[in-house]
Amino acid sequence: MSDGINYSVITITFNDGATIMETLESIGPEIRNDIEWVVVDAGSRDATWPLLEGYARTNPNIVAVRVISGGKPLTRGAGRALGARLARGDVLIHGFDTDVVFFPHSIVKIIKEYERGAQVAVGGDSYFACSRKDYFRAGGHSPEDQVAEDLNFYKRLTEHGIIYRSKVLNIEKFNHNPIQQIALEERDAKKRRGKK
Image (cartoon, rainbow, N blue to C red; front, side, top):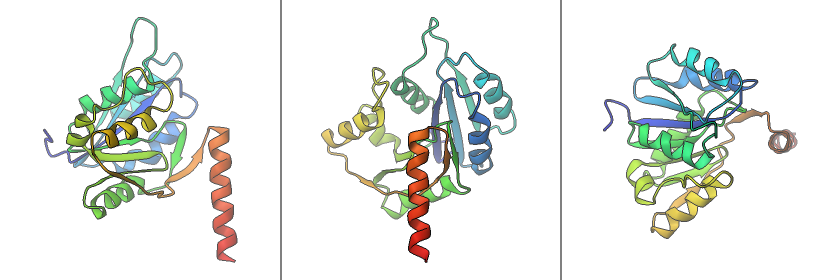
């Protein structure tokens, strides 16, 4: 199914017009011939879609999809599931929310971690990578899930006997979600204290 695409990064966005460009510019340079980025707009009512559509025109391996569903936005689970169905890669990398700015080489770090682990599914801070086969064998993300969609998916993986491992890679540079940003600042302060 790959068409030369080995990895598909899947992102869902909704009304992130104020932050999406920072995310696109932090990840966009990593999209290359063997990596595609599928970004699903769940029905934004702000500037998200025009910004996403314009950026997607700069790279043929960025696939922008806008879903308009009777005025009701897609759930996060439905958006992730749609992105997985549209993806061409053999390895699916979920996450990369559009309210987060990522460090350079974040995708490469995830790919290396996935391959280092003998291609066993791996999840951590703002990402989850698994084979297409395992994703669909476990039933993928549930369209009903608006919150905890990833945690519910991890549960389905284990219910289907698919092991996964956890690995924090510290790929988030800045998170526009205030609670998440506090956690990042605490992480960085801990690192600084450890270097002294």
